[in-house]
Length: 346
Image (cartoon, rainbow, N blue to C red; front, side, top):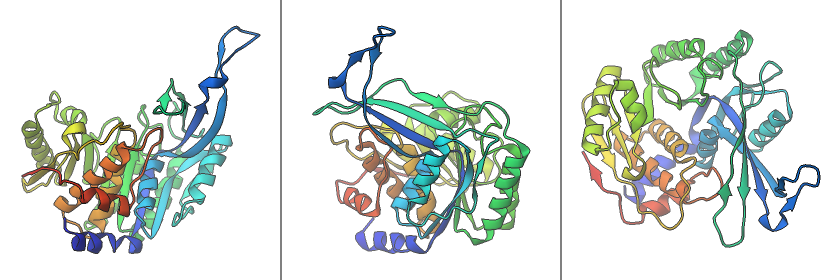
């Protein structure tokens, strides 16, 4: 992509209004100083002394972080937090971000705040090392009252947005924001606004999703087609074409070290190889950066090929950010695009 075309696409970002509907969680990092190691007098167990605590939006919030980093004019989170301390931290972090409009986000005593608590060993001269996570989740069905709020907020904003991103982060079906009833409301909006870019990602399964664009990894692609995941790129391209044909919408597949591909219902498919690695990497958040960049670029008028190239560069930026769930700005993406280009196959 030449610099002029990059400026044309990203120059439209400040005029975009993008909604992110899904499971917003709190990423809480506990930075442990190993030099302050102690032993508990009461239990005899090792004590990890936390030197610093930092928190940021995670899950659907990671996608939102990336949309904000791209400079979208207005970003609308549609989700919920619990009426608890973690929810307070999550709301504070969301409200502090430029362009984020909070009128579609709710706080409810009926749910707890989805939280990833990540202890990190932070030692000078070494990359951060994550210990076992401490997660807080909801394991019961999402109350109808919470679903009703999500659906009302979605319908209220549907006519005013340029793109909608769905991010299903929960492990147990019907326990988060993207429930069957909410998906039915998405289907109504997709039918009413066929030109609206809607991109869905689910860590559990995209099976049964309405006619929207789908983003997944290659293992999830195999599950959707009832096949074993292929490590061969050409086989994966054929599978993505088949799913796009069946679903009637574009399909995007992340391939880890093999890059990223996109297939359209008309049979077209483009693959970009991953950009070269530069030192230590941390893959956490790379997929969310891809999701955010695909949706934002497509909403700004980028072609499928162009959106893939931008998302591929964003992923390269994010994997080099250690000990955090990173983001990629337009300036950082531009810098990566100036490096030796990724290989492309059609």
